[in-house]
Length: 128
Image (cartoon, rainbow, N blue to C red; front, side):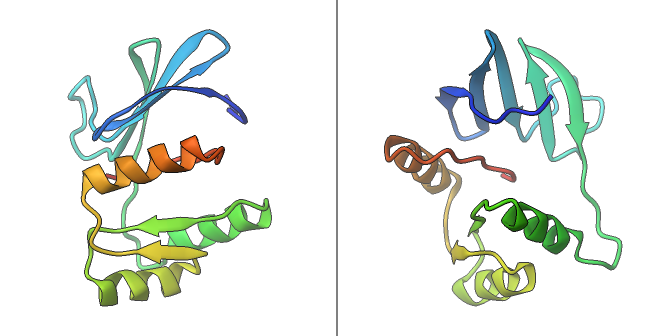
């Protein structure tokens, strides 16, 4: 399923729920089935967990390649990090993200998403 435009239902500190063609699609950081607590991103469709997406370190910075592909498709990438200013700047540089912000708690990230949405920006959050 490719979601290009969806109506926001809810944003909370654990994830985001959108309405897509009459279905509730939720992305969040916890597996509701509890099958694999290491999966950082779970996707639910109408309350049923349909997929978990995992990331692991393999010596290559795969995230940087993903960021470049997103930017190639004319998407802006913003790093909202709990890390220190220096650590966030280093990571942002390694990923080649458009902009970054450090010292952000989960609630700060939720507020950022709400603010972007109120200003007409379609935003997606991946992480925790």
